Figure 1 (cartoon, rainbow, N blue to C red):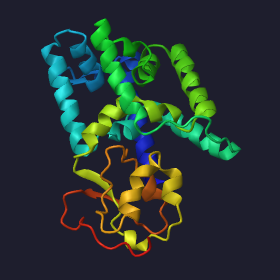
Figure 2 (cartoon, helix red, strand yellow):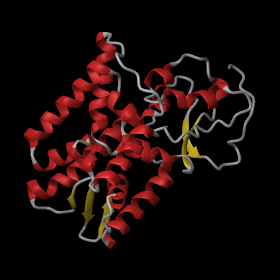
Figure 3 (cartoon, rainbow, N blue to C red):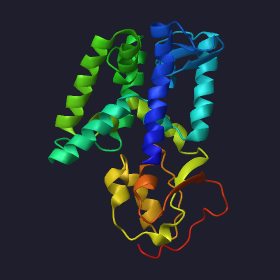
Length: 271
């Protein structure tokens, strides 16, 4: 449960920093996940919002440019989809509905392919280019939900309910399967040094515990099942959530540096 507790603490802490201003007048961070200013000094800009601004023909201001560079460098180092599991508040809803579906035995009605989020990402850029406006942000729950929490609790409940029933009735973690924000951050994650590593994969007894809890189970195939492959989970679709580390009874997984000499391909004994 260690990594689960740390993830929830991180998600709630981020929201808490944003809420300190409106609720207590302590403006450590002002704005929202789309664009914010930390300590009146450090701008942060959502890369997908920034790209829509560019595609719509608008010239971004210098703070927005600085903010998007800071975000890209940070998530490029720690693993792009860390945003999905450690920051995005939609993840709390996705995990809750996934847990409920498993408990009451609901099986997926819809299953979206791994490429769906990338097609939607391309569509978001196309909409901005054609209509000269960031139209996606009018319906994007990743930015609408936290903004609603910060500026209006009642609207946040409506968005939360919509996401909850979308995932509950249509598919396990249905929104996360198609989210273009997650798609963009996954591109940053392909070359990031911080990775989950199956460092002790020779201990794997194929209990499938990691596959059951992983939100992107396809990323586990190469390091656990392909003979001679690197034990590093290289896919940018990995969210670095630590679920596999928490549940593995054989302590197969750990966080590590993908460029470490020890992370070279070797035999898989129990595959």
